[in-house]
Image (cartoon, rainbow, N blue to C red; front, side):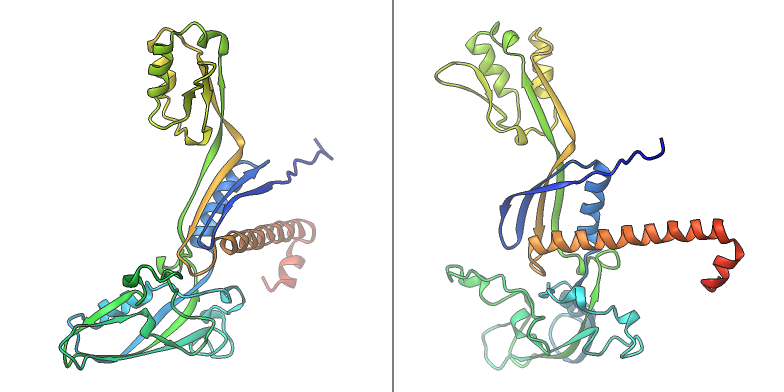
Length: 318
């Protein structure tokens, strides 16, 4: 029908927010948008990672390729990644990927001169840009001393040495997993649980307890005062249908009605530390908007071709 708009206005509600973790609700939208947001967070939000390694000296037990691979997987702080250029698109260095606009240079020099094994870690990498450095996973309180040294790259014995130069570039997880800023991104449909109170009252206390315990997760419990079954944590439900099967086995079908809200999703996002989890969500929304703008532009182009034919294609250089 002409003139009818199906536009929706999704809403986001933050439930829990930490540096590398965020849990939020996404409402008034459908699964296609939720899954698009999830996939963009995993594979299309850009970060910075080591992409080129030039080994000068390596007398360690690990070969050059092994060390280069370990360096690439070290997460780097990537707050400025969105504003950096992709090396393939950089006109300042003709796509060479070694200029201040599209890359960051690192150096590492380590040599063991004692009988004690030397741990070469991410903290031994020296960056040309103080805003792009290896992520610090150490405990701010300093309780866990084993985590204070950074991510181990290699271990050296007396006389062994490692010297190298590395170039970090902007990229996305679709090209290589080392550029993915997300450790975990999941979403679930918000469950809508309704207990048939009249049917529940026909059960004895022992039957109620047996039914509550049939759920693998603690979704239901018995109120100690009223002896009634209550929903304590609906989001713990894993859509396993165990309580429904138990009710049917007890001869009480329809004891509980559980449905998924098709327009409400609960997201859990954990970042690698390259960017904060909250920034990861915001960057993903921005990337998704850019992709939708590109689709809209292509639709406008098709409409122009339908209207102007060969003239429209010729004006675009087609």
